[in-house]
Length: 237
Image (cartoon, rainbow, N blue to C red; front, side, top):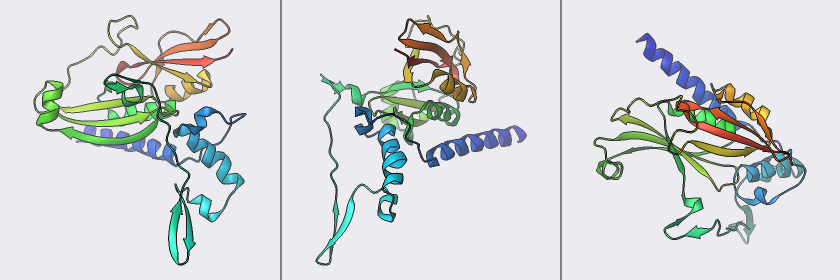
């Protein structure tokens, strides 16, 4: 019973980190507004909450609603200028925006916290079970929980899955980068050192060293939850 309690406490701490991350008001640090700020992801949230809201602060704006409420002849109306851009590029059978890279983990809360630290946004969590998923995956009696995360620009997604049943086979968490298969995920970041320090707080370890590729990138490989390798790339030229 003591071990079960310790696990529960640990999960509670991780969930608290997740909620704290969600509650932080973003700070706008970019030198200028770029196309990424209109993508509807974390960059857009930072622009609105970190720049517009403080500059034009009011009770109405503080609600951060999707529409402006007005009253005309006693009738309340909500007006919005929201729009949608049909992108990214489509191909037969789907589009890049419909795809997600999937990783299977044994500790969903810890893995989610790792990718939140990396800058992704949690879109939602769900439990999955039933005959339909058994037939899709090719296993019997599946009970799983998934978390879907999205990159700040809104064009990339990572899906994390934890199987409660059937039990997962042991994997090689120290498999080298040249092992056949889908080996690592790549993310472009603003500051490799800062991101690396944050990820190391979640147990991540450098696979090799931080290196410079010409005058273009600073690069490194980081091993995260369940041995998932993440490549960090900071553009310098």
